Length: 508
Image 1 (cartoon, rainbow, N blue to C red):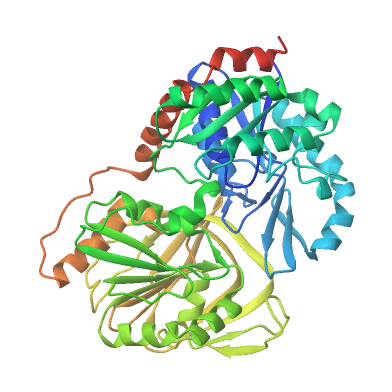
Image 2: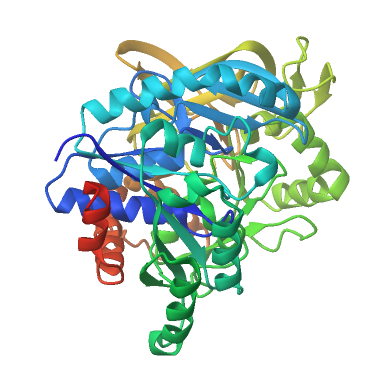
C-alpha cells in the first residue's frame, strides 16, 4: 500500500479526534505500515521542539510517538499560539512568522495552501498511510471559505473522511445529522463513516439509534468507542482533565497554577504516574490549598499572567507559602514570574515596558525579539542548602521555547548546566535556585520526564515530611507512554471495524 490517507473530522471540538488519530496511527503501525499523522493547522499553547529546533503542536508529537516516528514539522506545518483574545503568534514550518489578528490571518490563509500541500506531499511520499486530523467541525459554515484544516484539507489530500461524535456530552445523533446536512454535496461524498466516541453503558441500548442515524444519513457507523482511561496527552479533553484529580490518597500534594495563558502543561503529566503524588490544577477563581510543591507553569503571555496572579490574590497566597518554607517551582514563564523584574522594551508580549515579579528569585528577565527554540542535554548542579541539598547530578533531556533571557543576580545560583543544544556542544547555565533551596526556576520543558530527577525531588520532600524514600513504579516515562499507546490501540481496535477502515483507505 502506497500513499494512502484517512482523515478524522469531528462534530465539534473536544470530541476525541486527537486521541483517535493516535489510536489509528498505532493500529496501522502494529499492522506493519509506515504511518504518520498530519494536522495542517493546530491552535494550541502546547508545543514541542524537534531535533532541528523547530516548533510544532504537541498533539502531533503524541501521534508521531504512537506511529513510532520522530516528530517533524511536516506533520503540523501551521501552529497558532494565542497571545491575547484577538491575536495569535503564527508559526509556519516550525518558525515564527508574525503576530496576526483573526481577520489578518483569515485574509492570509489563501497564501498558505501551497505550504500545506508541500508539507503533506513530502510526508505522504515517505509513508504508506497518513492519518489526518481536522479541527473543530467541518460544519462551521462561516469558515468554509479558505478552509485549510477540514474539508479544504481533505480536498488537498484527496482523503476519505470519518466523522467523530462525542456521546458523553449528549446529543450525539443530532450533532452527527446536523454536521452531515450542513456539508456541501461534494463534501458529503467524502464522508465514508462515523465513529461514536466516549460511550458509557451497554452498546445494545444504543443500537436502535445507530440504525436510525445510518438510515437518515446513508453513512455507516464504524464503531462505538468506550470512554477510555488512558494516560495519554489529549488536547480534546483538556477542560475535563484540569478539573479532575488523578488521586487524592497520595502523601505529597502538588498544585499547578492554571494561568490564563498556560502553555506546555504536559510538563506535569509524568507526576500523575507517581504513586505518592496528588496532582491538582488551581483553576480561575480557586485558591491554593496546602501544597508541598507549588508549580507556576509556562505562559504564552508572562506579563498578563503575572498581573492575573496579582489581581486574583494568588500572589499573596504564593508569598505566604514561601514564608512557610514550601517548595515553589517555576517553568519557563513561571521562572520569569518568580524573579524581581521583567522588562519588555520591544513590546514583545505587551505594552508594559517593565513590571516587578514575585521577587522570590533574585533574577531579571529581558524579553527579546527572537525566540529560543532548542532541544537540550544537561546536568543538575550541586545544591548546598535547603530542601534539595546534595541532590545528585542527574543527566537531563528537555527543550526550550522562550522569548526572554534571564540574568541571575546575587545570592542566587544556577540549577542546571546545559552541555548540548541541538547538535552543538555548549556550556550554558540555566535556571536559578535561591539560597534556601526551596525556590527553583528553569527554562527547560520536560524536565520532570526525567524520572530519576523527579523521584529524587519528591523523596527530598518526603524526607522533609518525615516519610521514607520510595522508588518510582515506572522505569522511564517513555516506556510508560509506550504501554499506554498499546492499551489505547487495543481498546479502539476492539471497538471499531478496522477491516472496513482499510477498505475505505483503499477506496473499495
